[in-house]
Image 1 (spheres, one colour):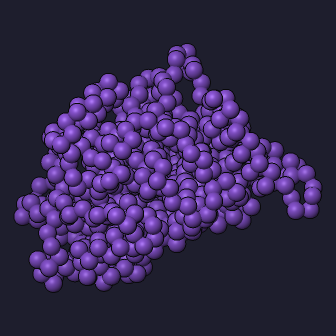
Image 2 (image 1 turned 180 degrees about the vertical axis):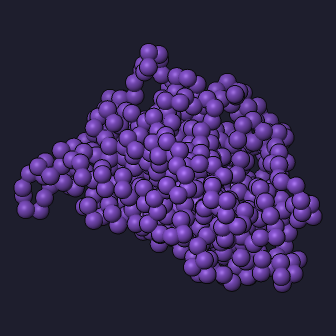
Image 3 (image 1 turned 45 degrees about the vertical axis):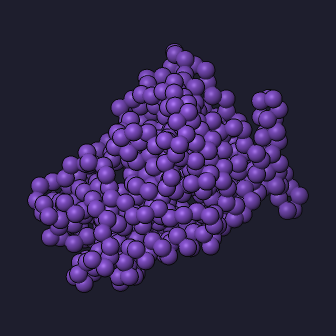
Length: 523
């Protein structure tokens, strides 16, 4: 059966190639393209909530992502690993958790003729082998580790350094086409240079573009902030309800979906710098907009305006990439995917509440109620295995393979990207690598979903950061913990926003799910 499925998939891809590359004048298209396998571009947002982009209900202007969605496919249910580093670790290895036997898909693509380059954030769990890191696997890699500021700080040195092919750069050495230097812009500058190099070759290419936006600190160009200043003065309660209704109108949410009540950030393990104890005590809490003074409302309007500006600027830069691909005539034979590494983040890592968010001198974070808006209609936040932390938007654009304006209920996971890329590049996953057996991949190819076919049984999956926030889903059932508390049980078909914990009503189902998780994934 698997042999016939693979033959069928190969036939679909071959037909797509014929459609894309057979010229209208009847000449042989092979002369123009040595290898007709699709190009692949992967774009990753950082700490951007499910509802923080336009095609998922936001009022934030993301025209380029919206264009990809309108001409491609959106997932209602696509899971990450609920935090930056485990999501990237799972993406690059195809494993929920691995060891020294883990491998990256990038060398596999290169071995069959792909060019492979990247520009952006790198951040892996300790179990990921060094050989999977970006400088070791990509031909060109402009990277930084974990988090760093967007503007060059007053000190002239970033919190964490940037690296070009593994060599550390001073801030002055970073090439930027727009001054003052802004990270989202110069990440794209490097990516465009790499894209030009790859387009010049007669071979398929893979571009990874993991942005840092809109992870804290909240810093944005003034002209972008000005677009949104005052638009959030109506408050987070109203904005959240407006997004919820918009999401139902556009079909991202089913009409029966209920919005979850506002929630506090219950992650008690996040430390914060000293100072401003009264502000910090309230930072992790939700409180009604009307309880704020006019001055506080204006401050919170600015905070969200800066966050929106960061997403807007990322989308502008995605537009630069799309323009370059279109100018090269490559759009028809390029798979482009966009997702974010986890839900919106209300961690208190603020360094100075006296400096408002936005400029170079600031280091501020998004407040819990605004993060709650970003995760509409779901509960909780980054790190949590609840949907607010673990379920992200996902857009896939591939003309002549993916029908326009599709919204799917099929379940995807970041672990699925590895086998998907191998599938469409016609690569067999190696049984051995580096002198040892490889680990079985945890993901499933998304190609059947892209083509509108009924995918094979997804099987079980996990998310949530470590055991304290773990979730485990199999079919419609999901178990999840909040901060190490007892397991909760939800029917995700009937109750996608996790409002009705069924653990006490269905103890047999709960026990079966817990036993299945412990047998498969308990780390």
